[in-house]
Image 1 (cartoon, rainbow, N blue to C red):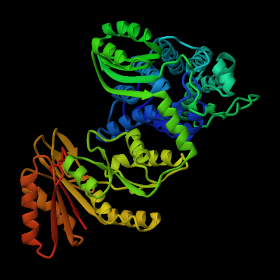
Image 2: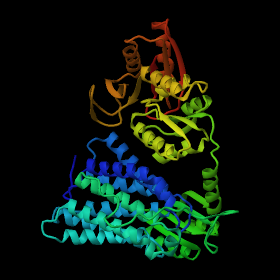
Image 3: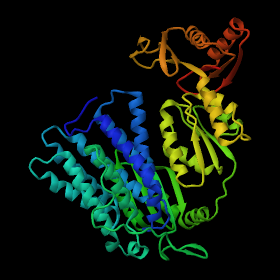
Image 4: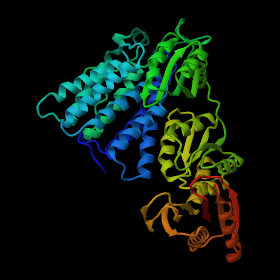
Length: 550
């Protein structure tokens, strides 16, 4: 894979966001508990985790689709993934920092030492974070970022400095700056906590240091006492909010020209606080706390086209979180299944599953699967990712959900939609959770699966070269056949799957694949009369035919 002069390769970038995602997952509850500023809504850790996991999901999917992905494209994909997935005040700021950091790396031509490039990228990230915020406040993630980038620049100025030295210096300075945040912000001192966003940034910088040095940095600098966590105070009516603070958090993505952004910022600044607007190239992520939700959205409409609008009422959000801590109301067992088409979604829903939309080209994020797990209300959840590249995402979502201590989650590593259908067919809530998971896992593994698709471009496959329009047969995720006639390829796939025996053939027709599915089913019925065959309308894209043999 291509490597830029800064030394950051595509795989190194992917490893960094993977480690950062895992680290934020592990620290999520701690960071949520620290969240008292600007609003004690207890979601900073979750928002930062979901922001970085969106970047991780984007780069993992891109590498899976193009193993030779160049570094410049990798930088762009990570930045865009974080921007699209950013949540909350700290998440939006973090997405801007990641975007600015990789933008500096992408500019490098090889004339600057690697250590200097890394330090300048950190400085660029810090400057971008301050610029993104309507009214910068010290004692927050901004202060921690400034301390880290200043230390990085100082380290890079030393003769013979290495990139690992820069990250080590930045991480140490960030941890020290985090410990000082209660002295800079009264709300933190009153609550006896450090800043939540700053703590999240320390976690991310620790991940960068781990990638650069191969070592995990210390938890806190020597001599710094860890400040105890104290949750926001409760009253009879719920959680104390600032009496004169805005009541709503408004977030949306915005398609707009850069020239419209200064006017938008001015309009939103007059409506409330905690204003953050980040992005470029007609894609912007807008975050603000207001009382007048309609006016905030109208400002976006005047600037461009707002979409994916999210509105959160702070009092309701905090009350719900508080009630969840007081009472665990989860019960029963649910299955969360990723479905690649409307027909498949209907099949899973008909079997009682909670469906997350997914499939090639639109694989679900960790946040989407996590939301489905947490919102289903069950005490036990089985997740069916139904796609090899979504298994890891599902596992991280499951682990994150289990960290709440109120839910048990297991992932059945189904590699294909038809394996998920086989697994849910044997799902039995009356069994113990472990027995149910074992039975579903065994059934999914024993369902041999294949598919038929059409080549979109010239490529070299495991079955040889292909040209656009060629019909490709897939077995267990690998290309096994290159042909020209869809029916011939389909029956060849079926014969290979039946070569190991089988009693049931399941065929799922994709968009435009109804005739192919009917022909394949007729072939099985006439050629293998002792084998049962069922046909479903899945409606999935890219694969006009999915097939499994059990």
